[in-house]
Image (cartoon, rainbow, N blue to C red; front, side, top):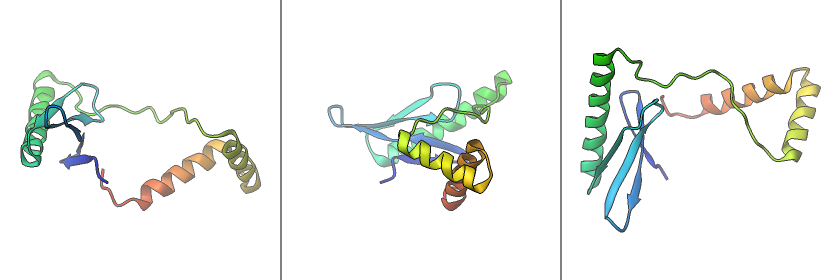
Length: 116
């Protein structure tokens, strides 16, 4: 199941509110909250595209970077047994746990066909 849409380099989350019978979402991966909605899939897609275009223009006008910046570090919480196995495998490979996790994430990202 795909709960996102893409336009240019932007990803939008997609949700459905059954009470209001409306699709809605927000632009992901930016510092600001930009949402969009529509009562049909076509309306949702158009609202997303319009929101992205408006956001790009606004950022350009005020001289703001239109992407979220990433530091390259984050916390990962996993089951203790997986942590133990990962650490042991890293030792056996002669690399740090950080290098082991980085390699695993890189392999998964490279395996996916999504072009971000």
